[in-house]
Image (cartoon, rainbow, N blue to C red; front, top):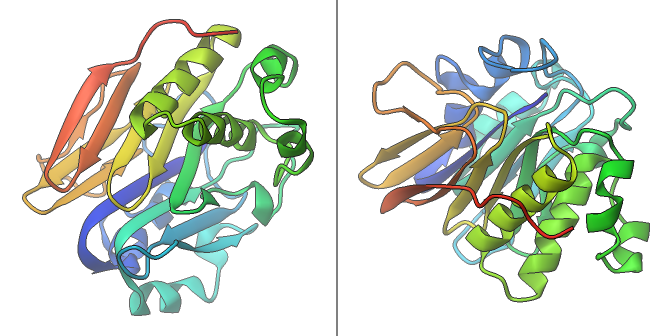
Length: 252
């Protein structure tokens, strides 16, 4: 599968999350501790999205190579600080297309999104949920992957005015009901809050007085990290973290 993380807090160098921590994202790309289900490395691309200043749309850097092999990212990460970050490394599901466009984070306006997992029975199992999307959205998806479809389903709810926590939770529940056995760790941020789900994959959260980190795996061995139980929703910002059970079922 994949690994992903989100950070909100005082501006910090990207390198702190991607390279410097003992179990930073680059290490998770080749030595993950808890992949659950399939894959041993995350070598099918990566992406980093960050907010250059408050209120600004995010900037993205995505490549279709392993994170550890990118010659430019270390310098970029060392020289760039941000108060909001979402980054991911990819292990592509068999049969899914590759390429930078298939790598998270995906974006729309101020939103950044990532998915760790897979939809079982793809694509037939989610034909019902997908039929609710505008045809033009389906025709213009960045890549024909389960992650991009999940992003479209979340975006549709957001466009209809649904709050981000509800949109993410309802999408996870809807797809879990349509495709049982799917792994649906979703991660969304707008630079003000982080929303995440756990369905079949690991996730941990760390909250300090002025910052919050949500990550597939802890970046270090600090006891401040808390594992998130399976089938739960995380809503977090630098002021606090709320973890609640996901709703059961969902519309077809």
